[in-house]
Length: 157
Ligand SMILES: [Zn+2]
Image (tube, rainbow, N blue to C red; front, side, top):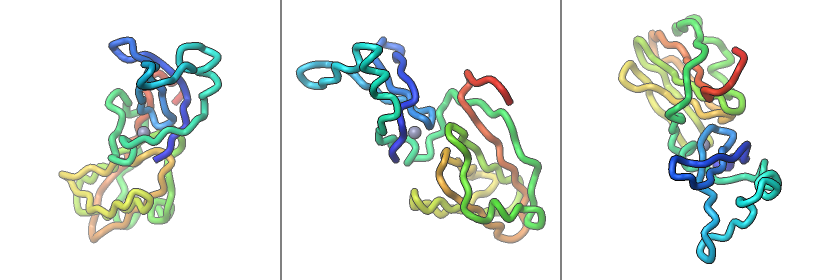
């Protein structure tokens, strides 16, 4: 899916990367004449590319960025306390990933825009992709909670 560039950095080899709103990064090498990205070599050029959209296939694959850390979780919900808001399409905000962790029972997890319709269980965690609409539905008795993840360098709560 398309994600805006929110920053730039270097990978462990010193190659330039663009950081996307989802927390994933992509190489933006300038390697003429094969890859021409003169803009990446100057701060002015990089600034001009902030907000540009890049296609992030790692979001399409439900890949929670490895360095992200859990910072908040919901109470445990059951089939009776499952909030109506979670049964309707809803999403997390920019840069916020989540894991849906089932302790008992089965939970249906649907993400229409990514063509996903799966059954979560104790052995199958659901990954919530930032800003992507999704909903859940209890299949019989259930106990589950949601754990939220964000980039490690953020302040606040
Ligand atoms: Zn991504």
